[in-house]
Image (cartoon, rainbow, N blue to C red; front, side, top):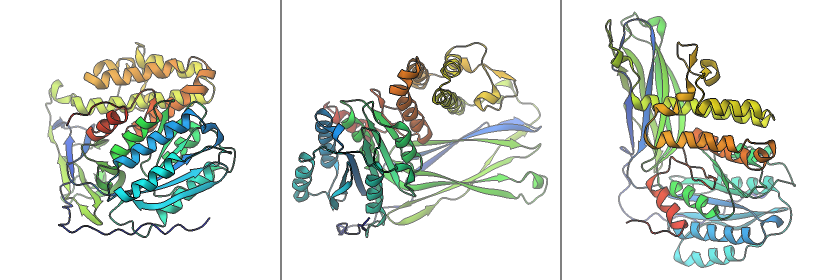
Length: 464
């Protein structure tokens, strides 16, 4: 494959450089008073993107134009791409790649300006569908365009990869995605959710979305709303756990570790729930800091030590997990139930899958802590009552997700036709804490700009 390094040069406009610090807010939630004896505590870290200037973006749209895309599907794809073009600004660049039997680059990465819009509109309106489905060729070309950019500093890069069918040329599983964000979109009932979710999972912060006919523009719009509001790139959590062997010494030793959280958008929240074992008497339980990139610079926060008060007498109220910490713990445990049920359904064990979901919704017998990955000292916990412990939208959403997944596991045929795509998209969204369309429904985790773009694509008025 040829090397694509002919992206359009960028001339930076005059003006002050953007401010790099202060783009991420960290909130820490944990119990302040804990028992003196050995115990385990949960700590919730919530990272939120502040309202600052965004990064410019380079998007490579990789589009399926195989023969099955003829007719309504092709017209819907054109509408979705025209929306993408219209929302990009002169600081952003767009490249369009199509694939059928082979991949073809329609244009290099070009700035989206009033003069270039005419060219983009012509390319989009003249798309036509014919031939086989070579996902491997399309993905490789998209990756090559992003990886060989001459101008990549200070810019967000992402691939929007769309498919409506099963690959019948090449093998996309042979492609090493690497450190590139790839958001995948399955269109209709005939696409391969396993391949598309695999591409997203092996990328840097990508998601897999499942869309029915009539909804592709909504999926592109919501994804684009995130890409056009990134305020911190490559957010990385740096945390230090205490070395229990040195807890009784004056000089505490900390064991460092890092977790990459990916890019963060304006008003987007990313939660990290940590479980920390506290030896008797230890008060400094965790040390955290974080780094991110913006405008080619790296910002590193000051380290923060999380401390607790150890006391012999702790009231029952003080021992209760804080409501927001409990809510995130419940969400993660219900997601594990969904994942286990999906694995059972993939193995054609629908009875076991449905049993897990039913108990997750309402069974009084509950799950063992091993089944849900919990750490309760009880041998059984009423996971069937988990949703009832929540308040507001989260309670409704999680219960509705369990119930819809249960309906789509009514038979193996229904699961393989619609349920697998729904389940994979649902898990992709929860794991990334990012929106991912699920059939006719749109996911939570959406930021205000994602919601505005979604309403625009749906043809609804957006409040100013």
